[in-house]
Length: 204
Image (cartoon, rainbow, N blue to C red; front, side):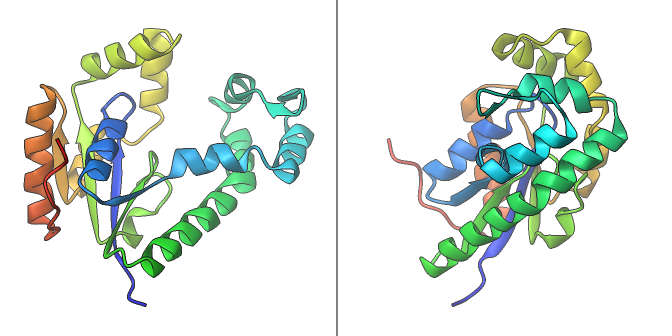
């Protein structure tokens, strides 16, 4: 069984990474979503018990109160490190298992959709990295439209990630998501070609 090429997909909050992930899936590529795996991990009984032990009150009715947990760790480096120690090894194990499953199915390329790809030190494990970016005011407006977060809260979260310029400098390809979908798709197809990834056109 050959090891598939591993492409990282990342971008700052509100950049449109999920949109690009959907476009990649429409082109027949396997996309593994680290956020989805993190949600599944935090449904495991053992993980919930550890989270409640470390952050009393964040588990209610047998489910994780994500907003309460976010409030507890935001701006607290020690608390965030403890959260990551509980969840990250399990998320990475799930991603590795899914990658192995895709390889067994004959996938030659696997895209790992990881919001904190650079911050988590995972970029070095990738054969290429696609960064999705957009101007900060546009990203803030997008997040405000889909969430109850204020502009100040969004900007604070953005500030805790690597600066967009730093991500762009480390990227294999940068997609400027500041226009319409056709503009984004054209950039994505050029990026895939540059990465040597041949994909069929998306179905109509």
